[in-house]
Length: 443
Image 1: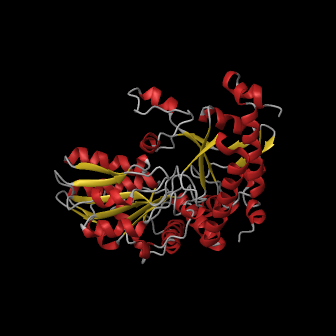
Image 2: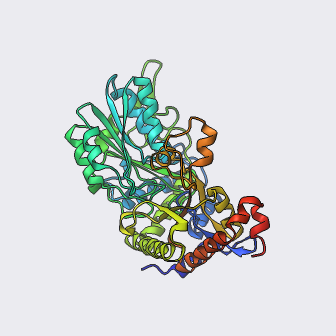
Image 3: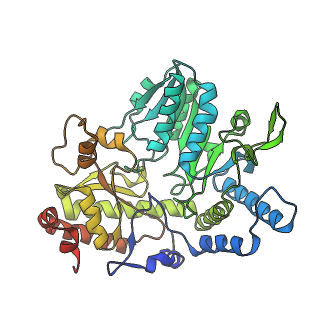
């Protein structure tokens, strides 16, 4: 198990106070905090080793290049890739998924082909393929979600057909926390010869990841969600598929030779890392991966399971039906995410009230609008049976509050969180009519 108190000492921001109260950071699904080891690794690079990579024979450039290349090796080890050259550094999951959609989709999708995504998808996984389908006159088909928050595997078997060229899906939902059965999805996709693209943004930071066992063709994930810097991420791809891809972005550092008539591309991953890369972010991400490997991803996973189990138990026992919870009830089936609404109280008001009590959460639809519409996730007791035509009305009526945990969170913080929700329920009617600051300040 984790030594959480020792871990917390590595995160300076946790000593900060918000509105006079010690920060409780439950917004980890959006972005995680950074340990001193990552901060110092970036500062050390700037102080002692900074230069551009792959461009100079001078000492600083050689040092920077070596550090950047070793960062690829570290991330390959983190996900058990066969080789470092299967690891492409990108700015985030969104860029990685767009890279696949444009570099593979534009050249392989034909008119009449079908692309399968899920209603559970983050917009960054869904929208690139909708754009490709629009350009290529292909069809996008959706796999639905059950009311319990699981992927509808019966529908999956029906939606994937001989016309399917791509199956894209999240390994874990950023709203419900649901961990999907990758093997079932991959098996069905392979039966029709479809490319398999996995969004690992919400899974790689939280569960042990072995790309050799997943069986997917591509996996994308963000560094900032796993203790790394903003602007860092990875696209892992099967080497044979990467070799076939044309670059998504072209220019400096992607080529071996250029004439006025032709271009010879570098081998992966460099052909996909155009221009001066975010060198320090790659180095910082490698340090974050080392930090997590030292802790052990099995321990990370178990810690989150225990926090979710404890949170759900207290929510049910102490707040009952006043709090509506979404997603799987079994903590083993989900990541460290608890999405909920307080009956009759707008999700943004709940989030703002929690902030005044020192607790950081996220509210809204979490870049997963279709999922909220499909499950009618709303603070209202009677959300509309039909989705409103007005965008403003949809944004006002649909959404949830999301608390998400990570390695530095504790049961004591959960206790404080439950106490804060209890207080919010007590002053619910006041919060509907008065500014949150007037109700929560000084409590």
